[in-house]
Amino acid sequence: MARQRRPKYKKDARVGLFVSCTTNLFRPSLIKAAVHLLEKAGYEVEAPSIQSCCGLVSLRSNELDDARDLAKEVISQFGHYDFVAVLSPFCAKVFERAYMPLLSEQSEELAKITAKFTRKCFEVSDLLLAAPDFAQKLGGFAGKVAFLDVSDAPNLFGSQVASRALLGQMEQVSVVDLPQICASQVKGAPDGTISPELGQGDLSGLLHAVRSCGAGTLVSTDLALLMELSTHLRKYGSAIELRPVLEVLAGDTQSMPIGISARVMSGQSVL
Image 1 (cartoon, rainbow, N blue to C red):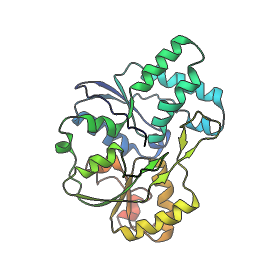
Image 2 (cartoon, rainbow, N blue to C red; image 1 turned 90 degrees about the vertical axis):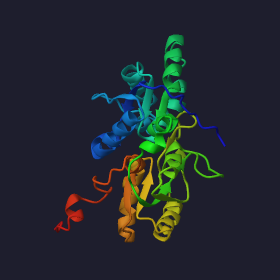
Image 3 (cartoon, one colour; image 1 turned 180 degrees about the vertical axis):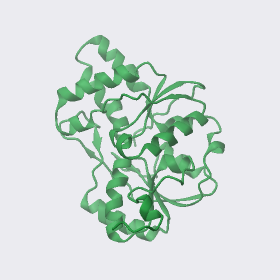
């Protein structure tokens, strides 16, 4: 199993929040939850209003020149921060594994800048877990939660991601682990660049596991995957609520569950 990179905590470190394209368009409440948690952990947080795409879409389309241009833009926008907190695990993998192969051969100076940038990129939950005694600052969410881990390699001994560890530290939360989804390698992209694709075999087993787990809430680290899954679960007749894991960690129960409109939640007709 690959060793998980962990950041070294620095109080008052300047953190740039990288917001994924999907989150920016569909889930502003997730941005709010991330900022709230990072500030409680002692970081100084900024979410630049102008942000480029991480480049995953270009990599999936094998448009490597476009991916290089986007990588340079992201580094220019976020390179001055002490840490870069990334909302999507797939964007984080692009930063960690694709940027160096894309840019290292362009110039020695750019290679050094890129290497420095990638070393300070982490998922939001990694930075939270690094903060001392952060478990005492977690939100007041209570209930049984199903956790869906997405990785590029099987986790033989359980999920190693920081968000799962933080969930386990919430006193009023009982966690059940769903079968892991193994994301696929992006063809033509640098090795280790993964994409959130839910295969038919994964979907069938996952729907059965969700139905039988007894949890009222399903959480995961990737918003796009949760949005895709919500459609299948509604067709399947499941009433489970889907939420980004950071919103649960923040104790946010006011935001609508993914795939459920405010009108439905209030009992109004949608016709």
